[in-house]
Image (tube, rainbow over all chains, first blue to last red; front, side, top):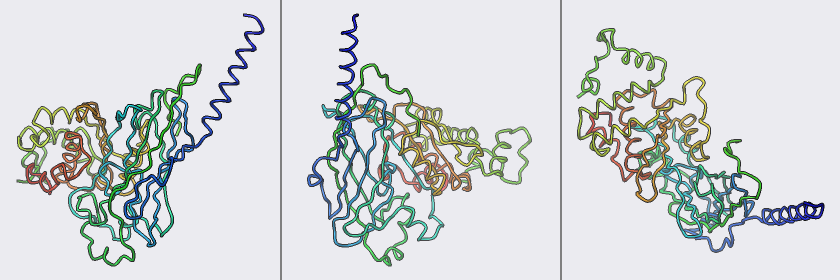
Length: 219
Length: 174
């Protein structure tokens, strides 16, 4: 190999880095927020700071709930919640063929009998007031443990669904289910229903010559 | 019937005969407000052995035994206990709610998307203070409830028997 071939290799490496830098710098803003489904004035929006991630790199996802009504609302505050939650955001990740990625099931439960804590304690644990015209959110870190498809290169779509059964949800895991009188005293109503988010596309890229981290457990 | 009688254990105040190390370990665990995982699993195993209808909730005795053998009970209050490495954000959030918000238990497991069934790999059940302060019959109800989530691979509470039903069928707390 002569000096020319070395130079070409270095140049092609630089070009690759420039292309990837540009690609990675583009935020995946969740496409058109107007295309998100709004159920009685709430909007769920998924945003990722980047459109492309290196294989093994954690994917950052911001979940935003926006109150587009003109009234203050109680909404469930556990956005990164369990699958049996009264209110939470459920995520689905699919590949470009529409196949759904496996993911772990997560459950949180209460036991038999009513909770003994005071109403305010229980209220503040699971609910938040979202003033009219404002939003709140959480950042969730996704990797191949969250969705196994993220362990291989490809293009993936992520869709969220915010579901809320309300403060009087009869589930035994809802500690407010019997507090009808206390709930009636609250100054704002609780948002109940189901909304879907925008469709967010991300790309997982294997960089040539860079092996993915085996365990991305640096959190 | 009182659950301890059903399981053949002496009532409080009785002499446990001094030979029953499981019993003594459980007593010590209860005194220290900690759970003896092996002992609790044995109670469940005995219960499924003696009460067929209870085991049937989980798909029969064999299925119940398989579930028990794959269940890892984690007492998050145990001194020195650390959050296991490799959990997702959602799993960590769930475990933290057991630790901080006094939720009774959290369970996390994987399943096969094609069959829609639990994939028979080991799974963790995390229990905290609320669970530990509860009497055994209530602990058993909650443990069976967690096993039901796995057995039926569902997060929907309406898809599985309620604690009242579990208590009625299994003779545990309602």
